[in-house]
Image (cartoon, rainbow, N blue to C red):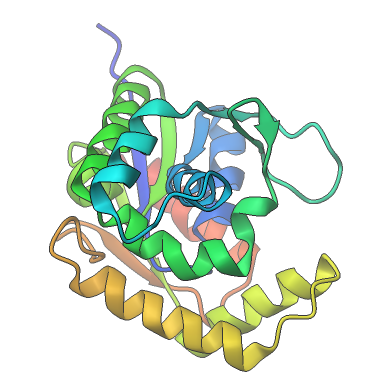
Length: 226
């Protein structure tokens, strides 16, 4: 049987995971999958369908019932993919402040993680893939051939997110973004289920002062050594 190589890239919000993973996947001809968008889609669904995000059982049931599809980008607006929730394009909706404020809670629910992890593992075990998230190397694909943990200072990550909002014409204040990101970092790293941390065998890359090209080169060098 042909060996299928899986590359896991983990890290906190705006550390560069999605951008780097997409570039690496394109260079290798691998599938690119950002698992975080699945949890964002569940969070958005809870908001749209008026399901109380504090009601764990209700959110778990919702996660099992909704349809989430990830497709190649169909619109030239800097998106990296189309996110389709129950047949509707919600690619930018899942990046809203309301989703940002609630996705950590939703993604901490056991039922939500079970439903999403099952889908992610099925993809990762049957395709050459570059998979991105917060628990890929530790939970979803612990058998990944290459495990990378990207990090950056919270201040730099908040500025990156701030620039993204500005580019889309959404004038969200930097201080609000920073505060939300600090709260999410704390929640993600201290939650009981699948907390955010680097796998023991992961290579940690601090992207704070690195360009996208520099980080991509480092990752490709690591991959070439396998």
